[in-house]
Length: 134
Image (cartoon, rainbow, N blue to C red):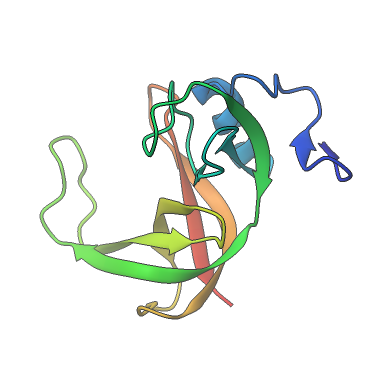
């Protein structure tokens, strides 16, 4: 649920976005990030401090669920414990922030418009957003 007027997620502590709250938003079809109160930089995932200026003055913001493929690659040699091969991952530019995600469906290229279409979750509860071409 979102307070559209403030861009903040209701029910989520706006002063501290946790990985758990970020994951729950992804499961619900939303994306959350953090905006630095000092330098105004926006991150697509929870951080303890701003990677640009080091400030801990971070507030939770709603991010777009639509974006553009900034860069992409196909994983043919997956990490240990992953059997799937030939899947596509990308850094998606959401406008305010960039986010790493899986791509599904028709192959996407750099510059293609994509939309959040779901998520993957591993046995430990770690969530990865999935996007597909629009």
